[in-house]
Length: 438
Ligand code: GDP
Ligand code: GDP
Image (cartoon, rainbow, N blue to C red; front, top):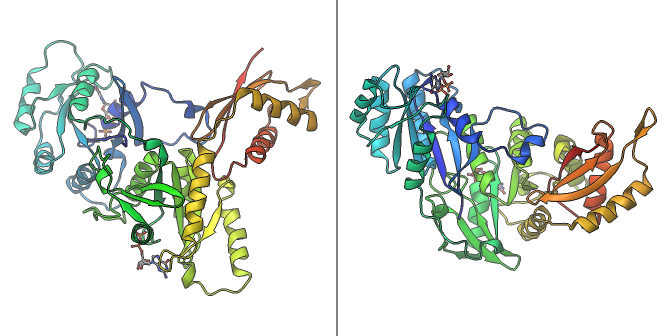
């Protein structure tokens, strides 16, 4: 079962992003050690009383139009309605209830998504301020008083959220199922691909649906295994919100990637590589998922015997930040190489989940350092004392060294490549965490 999604909506300046950061920040993930994960997040993982869910700050999705606030808010609220299992509607006790709040409330009421009203900026402990009570007029049940800055009331808020999340079910054999997200910019052929494979393979109706989104995923079985194609929101039910909002299509990709084991990054062969392709691919890369670059619509390209190699060489440059990802040329329309695609998905999923024992790792380390001496600086040589795998998906290794500075990127790369070679790790990022020990 996938992780439920909770969306935060509300007018500008009520404190959505403060609340988001407060809720997300309670838990520092290992990913913080990874370079490149610095951009402002609008999507993150949250855990409360042993339940995990994903949190989305819709305030970070800015429709590109110069619309008046109300219409922007409507778009954001619609996104929340389309994608979330529960909505936190943030208001501001200092401004009191304003017309826009009522407007949003009406829209949320018409949806079937549970809504929790959070009255923010109640900074003093104890009885709520008098203005708190007017928020009952939103008609969305008992409001909860919160101070996002101080953290007061966030526990009550999270308790209310948990009450509205779908029941957690036992994960029946879910380990056997490989979850696949097909991502890419609009019109690359995402729905064509999912439709094609669900037409050609045995389609299984999922009985493990837990969240609203599980119900629209597509699970199929073939000789390579059982695969669930994650609904990249709107693959099957077209959303009311325009795909053209780039922020939104990236967020949808992010939500799908979050639930996936393997991401198939689709490129349109007739268009060629674009910046947006690299942004979408970057989402999968940063999330540490298994990645495959699939050039779709290969049927529509005029070609001779050199075209594919030339195309591939160019893409290897464009995607040099994820050189581990295999590149495959397919056609969702004719079905070309879809068998090979499944074979790759299977392979990449096991690379991503690879676990290597500490003993084996340190054998590899001993051999590798004997073959290529670790770097020195001013008479001091890098010593790598010990290496162990901290986690899988992606394989993450911790190295204990005498000096972080001496552990140059190129030497890290060398070690990583040794491990990749020995275990034929294809299609997965690998992370190295370096710890200094005296
Ligand atoms: P957003 O536009 O809804 O995301 O709002 P922000 O999170 O950017 O917050 C807007 C302003 O309200 C900032 O100056 C915050 O510091 C402030 N703010 C947010 N939460 C609280 C709170 O609980 N108490 C007080 N006093 N100020 C807050
Ligand atoms: P999505 O927006 O990424 O889901 O893209 P669609 O699946 O809706 O496809 C966009 C357009 O590309 C449609 O007109 C499809 O018929 C076309 N298309 C998709 N896959 C292929 C393919 O393999 N070959 C060709 N020639 N056209 C394709």
